[in-house]
Image (cartoon, one colour):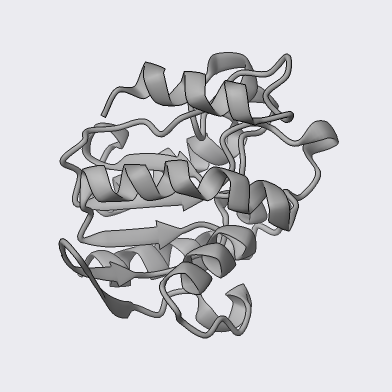
Length: 182
């Protein structure tokens, strides 16, 4: 996968990218676990890497609880450019960016996709024809889907940023990840 070529295609096709960094996924292309968030935040936009702000630091902590580190997983987002004022991405933006995420998924061929938060989970569930009842109902559950390159497990979790604003979710996130990795 030629990441620079993909970034250029995104810049040419996207109004969101005007004056912003394209934040493509990061991690080994043979990772068996792929985390997918919603969209880059301000730190991610500045550095051009996903999950490098406070939520990213908490994600790193979560990975340590299951003896993983960032270098062993692939981390991406549904939308590759930060929406203005950190607003939720629109349906049109999600659809515009999905082909690039789909390319990442096909290239990496993960065994487990972990959508982080409601927007990522809803998008992934829709793409794999799964019924989405909301992140509070779906977090920690594991679904199996068949793809052209084999079976993938989809296991949604709350977004790590949710635990920053609601510390009670820290333990929920830790338990969900432990159960998923088992």
